[in-house]
Amino acid sequence: FFFALIIANIIAVVLESIPEVDEYIGNQDGNFFDVFEAWSVFFFTVDYILRLLSARKSREALYSPLVYATTFFGIVDLASIAPWYIQVVLSKTGNLSGDEAKVFRIFRIFRVLQLEDFITAFSKLDNVFRASKDVLKATGLMAIIIWVGTSALFFIFEENNPNFRQCDYSIPLVEVDGEPGCYDFDSTAACNEYYPGMCSQSAFTNMPNTMFYVAVFLGGDWGFVDFTWPGKIVCMFLCVAGIALYSVPVGSLFDSFGAVLGLSDDGDDEEEEGERA
Image 1: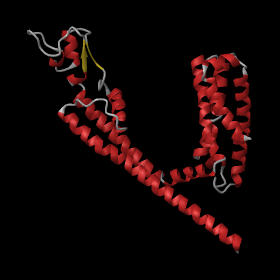
Image 2 (image 1 turned 180 degrees about the horizontal axis):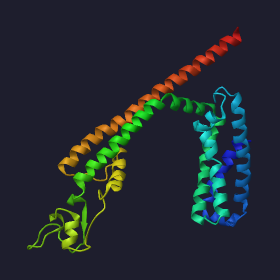
Image 3 (image 1 turned 135 degrees about the vertical axis):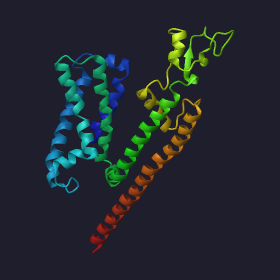
């Protein structure tokens, strides 16, 4: 039943996002999708409460409802119903617009993660992440340090890089007939002093802006490459550091996968031997 309900919820989210279908069903309050969602949340809520109560007799949850609630799939169970209750509260208080309501409805797509309860192999993912949590924490801290540190360096070195400066089409790129060009100024601010409101820079203008681009760089997508020499050195370091940041947790996860699968196979062999005996 729950397997079919989860699949039906996913299909409902997809169909509701199509304007023609939503209009045909009736996009006013209390339409088919709203009623279906309310009943779905009711069943998912009952299921979640029962899981919390039965956790006291579950060895996997260490006989604790709190432990189950903090596992990956316990969080998934809660996340699959919480947006609906938040939406209802905001709607009753008049603090919910149509676009915001759409966001809460789209959250239902995460119910696909609840299929873990019906596909046993997915349950090993939680064990793998738990086995690798120390390495993932250390790598995450290292990633944050490298991310923030290199962002600061990029901001210092590239803030006034003329290669990232845009000027009005009437301004020459370099000096012409004694008139300074867009790239001739030491900073974008100096360019704007000479050509008021005609110079701008979209990249590396402040730390949050720089951190966004560095996060993209860490993913391997280099939207900018015309760095200064100090920036190029940071760029080379970031390329090497980025590979290391990905390889360490990936290697740990693969090791944990092997360990978890090995333990599972050993357990199956022991059960088979027990049955034969």
